[in-house]
Length: 150
Image 1 (cartoon, rainbow, N blue to C red):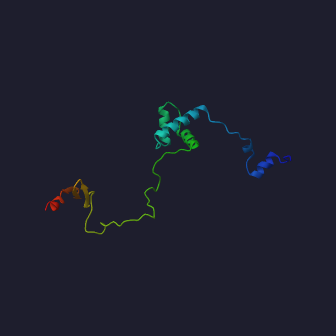
Image 2 (cartoon, rainbow, N blue to C red):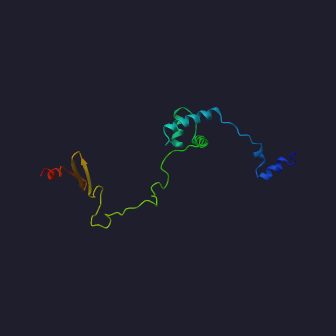
Image 3 (cartoon, rainbow, N blue to C red):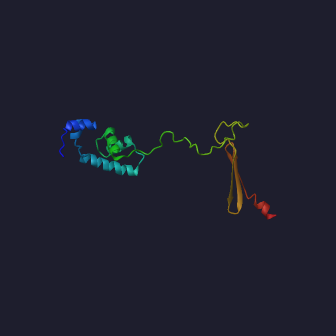
């Protein structure tokens, strides 16, 4: 069966401009392929490099590139810098939240390390307690040995 529709009519039916029918994409130049290879190597070493740092890296190697070219090439390669995104500190609603026990107490916390803290641990055959308040840390060890000797 012959195609009796003109190219103009076919493009109208598909909803695309006629120029898109004739468009032939060009391959990347050798320079762009070399830049993409260097970007890939550097991204493998330092995945936290974004467009500005990657541009500075390529310039340090002697290539005259701007951030727009680096952005386009990284977009073609589908890579972007790894960094904390927005709202990364919002907790999951399924996690349990614990109450802040010091709030509302008679302690007035006005500087860091002001809260009393305990740490109980076993060191070889003895128990130790380390505690601190107002930034001072005290340690009591061998307190269990006194009970075992008698």
